[in-house]
Image (cartoon, rainbow, N blue to C red):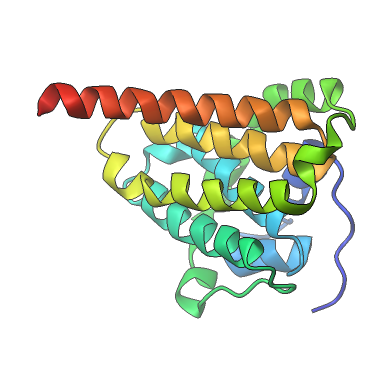
Length: 198
């Protein structure tokens, strides 16, 4: 696969996701081709921000997204240099109309995040801390199939993953901390609900 242009902002990322003229559907393989098979962070972030959007309401979408994110995250954790996804996932797609709706919805929050990000607390985005972010991202994603029946929970969890991956992409430790805190709160809330049921 040819080297893809470097992505430095959410604006760049959303632009890579935008359907091209004449596209009726956007396929997972097309997005991976646009961002490059070395861009584990970008692929995870793309899928996560889709789940933050209203597209998460489509039945089965959180589960499919969880499979893609978990595969990417654990490959990143174990140090693979090129991303691999099975063909059954590469062939999954979303209609161009739904994708454009999601991207339009995401434009304002993405502009805000881009405006306030900068390289800081970079130790959280390198070395073992980078692997920690990948590992927790994979674990967060694995919970989504079970949480899909609960309204908005997968979107909040995907928001935590988005913060972690955005922080890795921009080397901004503040967003990484935000992702950890948000993910921890969600996990604590789920445990509380579970304990109440039992």
